[in-house]
Image 1 (cartoon, rainbow, N blue to C red):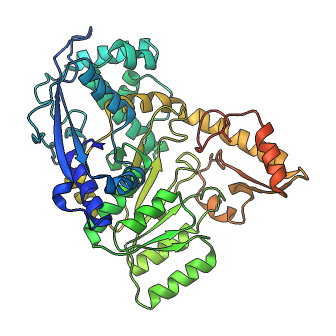
Image 2: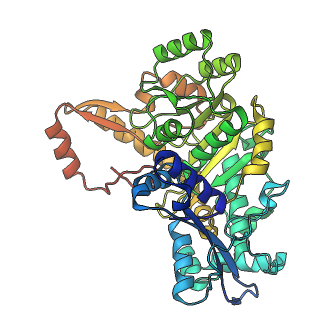
Image 3: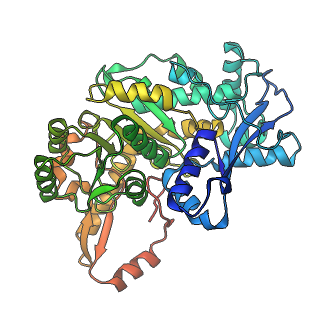
Length: 476
């Protein structure tokens, strides 16, 4: 199983040994692969990557299920584009792996997070950095062509890394609320930050936004960082979450207290436990939840966290950052950029945003300066930036369409119930965090009176169908 860095691979190896005590340490091996790529210049005058490091974890068949669980729950494996890039390097004989078990160079870690090299360029110290003029020319060429053609065909295996670094900056600005216009990268780079639309009204910085290869990677690493800071304590899972979130809290560390309903009575029970002296690492919740679209009482949760000393982590994927502002009630806000932020269903990504006024901000920030690795693959970042340029206009249309569909369904006699934040018993909690121009999102759930009616409805509806959400087309 391939991973972007040795540190990620080491976490996988440790997990395999913890899940299968019968497996001895020598049976799980780490092999660092340096893919040496022949330098090739593109027509911008810059060269593509000349080396790339990935780490291979070799394990016995008995550990296969545990390895799959690690890959699934943590979201830390290499992306399909990175895998394709590496495979093509071998296939085209542009790469030569070094001696067996040769250690790859570790990613550089420095005091400024986004100046350190990522897994995509961690071993590319021999590349001549492109000048600003060359970088601008590369971006201009990228914008003149279709993104897919540009990345997959024009440059092929010689992706200009200046595109990726620019894309990551723009993604972080977009998440921070400092970039809302649908403009090309070069123009976006020149635009000043719009503090009037900043999510923290001047207190929020793009430097508090961290990018990850997937949404699950952002959740996994948030939990990992908090355990490193506060020790192996139980967490609280409040409300029914995306299943991998629950699995992370259960399988890494001493477990979690699970409140599946996420109701007021659950907060009463939690408060009673805290009053009796129980202590927890953090409370994880979604805002709103999927599929019942229930919104937790973040105000009360925040008060409890301050009184009894635990962190609050909110997943805003379903609500999304344009509709709701939950950062003031959380220490960390995580999101799957794969969903509505991208919309095109052709790239994955995740983010974690720190609350600069949070109780643990300084400690978390310091830990991330040491622990954070930028493993977001270059091509994925370019696709994500491209897809998210029209994020603002898409969200407005999605909000409007979803509400219209709800209005139709709620008046139909065949429909028993429609789950949507606007019509939820927890709407007051949602509205408290809803932005001035925010809507109620694009996800809704429908309950019919009988299974037969639900099956007929599903089969007859002529839309795309699949296990996801947040697409820029109707998905059931």
